[in-house]
Image 1: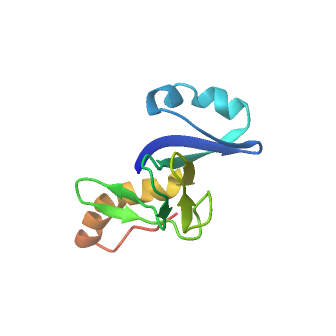
Image 2: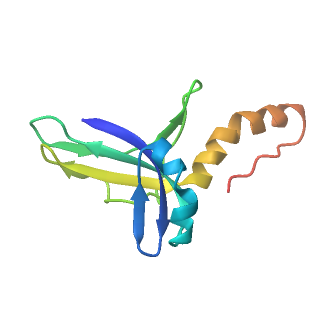
Length: 121
């Protein structure tokens, strides 16, 4: 099984994802076409010979390893999801949730010095 990260956007007509460098260069064009909500997407492909079941997925921040597992906010097939050999599926979550995860260490260091200022989106 192989998982690939990609940025994405969602609009009235659907979800679009792509390789990071190419995607980042086309954000303005996508917005003009009605794609207005930034996402983090993952494509999971079963590159083996036997079926696999995807029971969960998460976005992790390195080096700390803090992870966000989107329960009710995940876009994509319901979990647990079976992938037969050669099949792929996509899941995504709003970029604001991932940004909050990335900002968490900075917010927590402020919390240690004063009153907690971190509020999730």
